[in-house]
Length: 560
Image 1: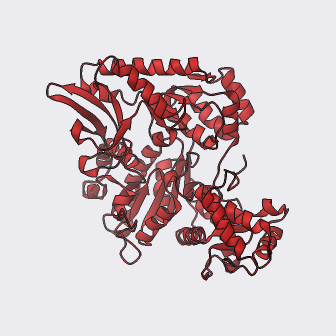
Image 2 (image 1 turned 180 degrees about the vertical axis):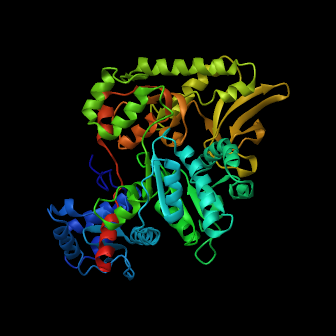
Image 3 (image 1 turned 45 degrees about the vertical axis):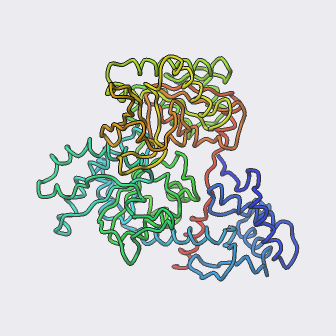
């Protein structure tokens, strides 16, 4: 599938204004300069770090596109040409590098990322051992930067736990001291899920490790913001190259969600001696802000020096253990990444995937999903204990790509809530916290349920493995959670998922979004979509454009 073209979405007024500024500084009037500037600005708002100019010049060779791009902006005081990633750039708004056009901010971010990655790469080959945990431990010991990727249920948590035992013992044998390990994740919800998994694994690790090495096991995972002590206003952290974190190994989970600026803040805060393990699924939805760091690192073209170095530090897991009882879900998750969209639609229509139903979006089918959800939550509210109700919160969910419209999560939440409240008061209401409140032990994305007690209604949660109970008046910002956006559900899993697509195509629909939604289901899945709408989504890969490979190739040539 082809990369999406930056700026393909309708241009914003800000992008048009930016294009006007660039166009006004042209020494030779050429409308293409403004078009490229507009596309580059808009592309940055869509998460692209640069614009590949070849398609705009219709050049067959990237070298020809590079010459055309440089010539187009020659003499423009606001656009500078860089000849090497480390070159100092004077005051400007845009940077030309070979056949890529950058906003200056994006240029600085991406060249900084390259510098950090190259500094953390080495040519040391890893032993080809069958045991995943031992191989991962060796990577984390000898590679300053390691990658662990795989879809949901492929055993990433188990691999990390096993590697931790081997790594701690090997580190102690090599350096004669107990290492310091940090665990972190990009969001409060991701950190909470990491903590739950860690607390499940920790007793096994304590048994496997020598008693004198128990102190090496970290207590809990932190959000990246808490780890770096990032100020909410300035967005600057307490730690930096002159005041680095004290750590020997940092494990960063859900790395597909981290953007380029936060990645750089993390690397800047770590000493060179600290080994970094990035963990995630590069096929899921990328970060909200600019960059798709994990995917960029694993997608470098073969043959380059940087690709070879990262490949030797990359452990990829493929076998799905979690969905072994639902082969249809496993098969669909794999086919989404490897099968032509037309064939995939045909298979869905012929019920080729067990445990998956493909329903054409209609008023009747959508009403059926709503009625099923209402029945489920009425049964939940009728349970004898709140503990049982909290345990059932992860059983089913409706996922929507959009918030608004007839098939958006706002509308569906309102429909379900209205049907439930005709039978009772707020007892049994399911809600989601939409802000991080560390003082209460709650994270953005935590699910809870309102329960009637003799002394009134209270909200009950289970966050990071801990049961929490709050008075209704003490609740932080929240919203109904019978239906969620796919972005909100990223990283969570449910026994059953109803995926409801809008009636018509929208740029928000993409293959990574469909893949992320499908892989939230553990046992069964309903897809409500018009075939044409789903087909359009599967054809929209929406990979974010970056210049990492071009930059790396350039620095390699300099070295040679």
